[in-house]
Amino acid sequence: MLRFPNAKINIGLNIVEKRSDGFHNIETIFYPIPLTDGLEIADSNKETIYNFSSSGIPIKIDDKDNIVCKAFDLLYRKCNIPSTNIHLHKNIPFGAGLGGGSSDAAFMIKMLNEKYKLELSFDEMKNLAGQLGSDCPFFIANKPVFAEGKGDIFSEIHIDLSGYYILLVKPNIHISTPEAYSRVAPSQPNKSLKELITEPIQNWKNLIFNDFENSIFPNHPKLGNIKNDLYNMGAVYASMSGSGSSLFGIFKDEPECPEIWSECFCWKSRL
Image 1 (cartoon, rainbow, N blue to C red):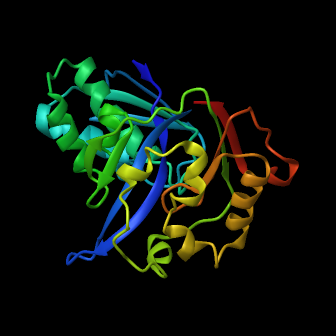
Image 2 (image 1 turned 180 degrees about the vertical axis):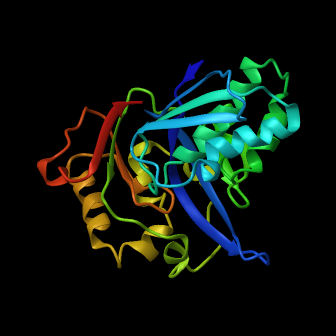
Image 3 (image 1 turned 30 degrees about the vertical axis):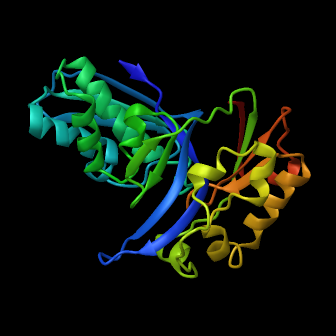
């Protein structure tokens, strides 16, 4: 069984307040995009619980720490599924704010449910995915949502970017979670993203923002420059996704990846 776990972008991200447990409440829009990994599972005749292999972008952690294997372990403990061969072809960049790992884990849950006829309900799969990460449950339904709380409380929204193009740029910059939150000043927005997202897309530039940009751009001016370049190229909307370090522009016409980004991961597609 072969599936293609896809990435997501954040359209707007407001840091609303710091919680008593040390986390932050946010509000954001998750929107799926067609940048994908490849995930394959097959029967195994080995005695091990699973056999994991990977290709594409190198994965520099032990197999047991990979979120795909954690997802398998979760269902193995719950449903006692048989030994399985797992292969992950990694194409979505790490540390990019694109949810690649979360998507891989959610797709693993859906694939195992289908392959082994576990008959898990949609809500059961969402609850299992939530044990692996705040945004993992999003990829179970894999439709645009308004997310709040820790980014794990979803409500459906109606937003359709089909017909537009997306250009995604991921420079070789790593941003840790502590760094991302270091200069953020939580505050309640005057208007919810739920309202702002209903505005025409050409108005988003002046209405919808990612609060992490205020924290991250001063230390990494290259990211701010890329965002400006996207607008100069004709993007109707541009933003950093999540806590970075990828940036995206949404275009009416198909854009090109400039030579100045030759050292970056650069990807484009029609939405």
